[in-house]
Image (cartoon, rainbow, N blue to C red; front, side):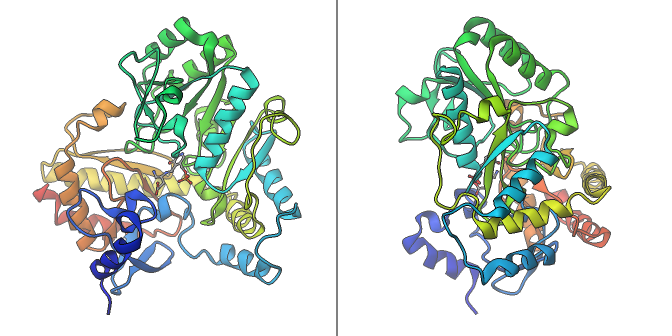
Length: 426
Ligand SMILES: Cc1ncc(COP(=O)(O)O)c(CN[C@@H](CN)CCC(=O)O)c1O
C-alpha cells in the first residue's frame, strides 16, 4: 500500500511543493499532508484506509457532505450529453435565476471558474464603472490571488500598498489600500481623505481567512455608508460566506446590501465555479453588454452548473441553516468546555455554518493583529493530535472550519471525545 508520505514525495517531483494549492501542504505542521482517496458524507478516507471526520469540506463547498447523491445524480444526468460546448446552455440561465432569487441584491450574475476570477472581475468592473483606480481591502482578508489583491498595507498605509507576493508590480499594488478589519474609524479616516479616488471596498463580511472573525456591530454599516457618500462600489466577497452563514449569505444575516457580491465554493457544489453579480446598472457595464471586458472558456460549464443548482436547491429546505448553526454551536461549546477543564487557553468564534478555534487567552479576536497573536505551536499540536485521532481540521491556524448537514451528533461527539486527549498537551 502506498502511504501519504510516499505519495507526497512522488508528487513533489513535478508539482511545486507537491500540491496544487499551498494550504494543502501542511506547511509548518511538521508532518506530510494526508492524501485522500475518497469521501462520503462527513468523512474523508485516506490512501491508507484511515477515516476522518472532516471539518474542511474541500474548503467550504461540501455543505451537505461529500458525494451528495443528489449532486452526483445531477452531474451523471448530463455526462452523456457532453462536458462543455462553449455555447450558451439553458442550465446557465437556471443557475443565474436561482442565484438572483436567493441573493436579492444580485439583479444580474456572471459565472466564472473560481473565486479568484470572480473577485478579480468585480474589482475590474468597479474600476471601470467609477473610472477610479484605488481599491480598499482589509488585512487578513483573502480574495484569491489576483495581483491587485495580493497587497499589504504599505508604509504610507493611506497612500499606497505594497505587494504581499513577488511578481506583483509595485505600480499596481500602490492602488490597493489595506485597512484593519473591524476598524470603522480607520475606514472613515481613509474615505474622508481620499474617498473620491476609491473605486470600491472589497471585504469578507465574515473574515474566514484569518481564522473566523465576524464583523463587530457598526463595521459593515460604516462600509455601506461611506460607499454611498463617496460613490464607491461595496463588494462583499461571499465566496466562503455565501449560502453558508445564511441561505442568502452574510448580507442576509447582517442585513447589509452590497453593490456587488462574489461567490464560489458552495455555488459550484464541488465543481470549479465562481460568480460575481449585483446591481443591474453596474453589471450592464460588463462585456458584451458594456465595455468592461471579462470572459472564460469554461465559465458556466453545464456539468458544474448542474452540480451547483442541485446543491443550492437542497439548501432551500426550511430550517437547514438553523440546524447547521446548531451543530456548530454544539461543537464549539463542547470544545470550549474541554479546553476550560484542561485549563488550555482556547476560545472559539463562529458565524452560521463556519467556525474558528483560537489558542489564546483573549476573550475575542476582531482583527489580523489579534489573530496572529495566538499560539501557533498549540494549534499545531492540537491539529496533529486530532488528525491522529481521526478528525480532519483545517491545516492552518488561519483558516476557518466548516460544518455540514451530514455531520451527525455522534460525529460531533466523536470529535469532542478526540479533543479530550490532546487538549492538556496544548
Ligand atoms: C473569501 C475568499 N475569496 C476568494 C477565494 C478564492 O477562491 P478560489 O480562487 O480558491 O476558488 C477564497 C479561497 N479560500 C481558500 C481557503 N481559505 C481556498 C483554499 C485554497 O486556497 O486552496 C476565499 O476564501
